[in-house]
Image 1 (cartoon, rainbow, N blue to C red):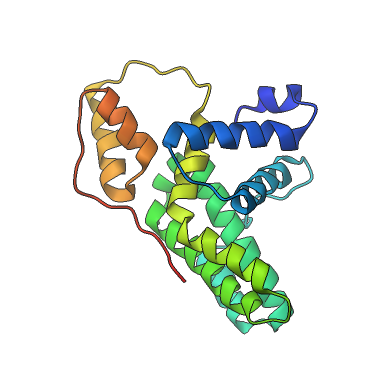
Image 2 (cartoon, helix red, strand yellow):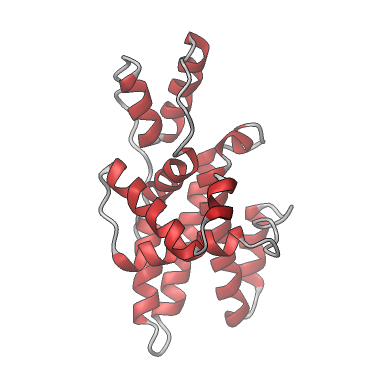
Length: 203
């Protein structure tokens, strides 16, 4: 994330809204206003100095297990934290994920399923239809939202000339993730990747 730009912005909400909308337009995405608001608030929350690292050192699978064993109210909060952490980490720390034991698809699957389960839990509660629909949309667009945050994270970085090794690494990442931003860079470099389709999660 471009920390210097964040520091210079007097209003984090407006700063991130501008970044999100710019990334949306760059990717040609359709983004409902309620999802836009959620993503902007997520970025604002994680940018605060007192915000702990997403999910700390707890693996997402253990968070999910803990959610299933928790009382309803606590389960809702854990699933929200799980979905938010998976989205934020997969959006801003792709290289960190790729050095780990699990790949990006794992984060997308865990986050998408967390939001999907949250949609069912909240949607079944009294007056919960609006939030249930929000989390259903977040689950269905999870892969696109990861691409959106990838674009936000990379905006402003100067493009360096890519070596053949860099291109191979990017192509390998694209075949595993279906990342639209990476696909665009490959095309700009003269490669036209075809074949892999990114996952989506419909509840």
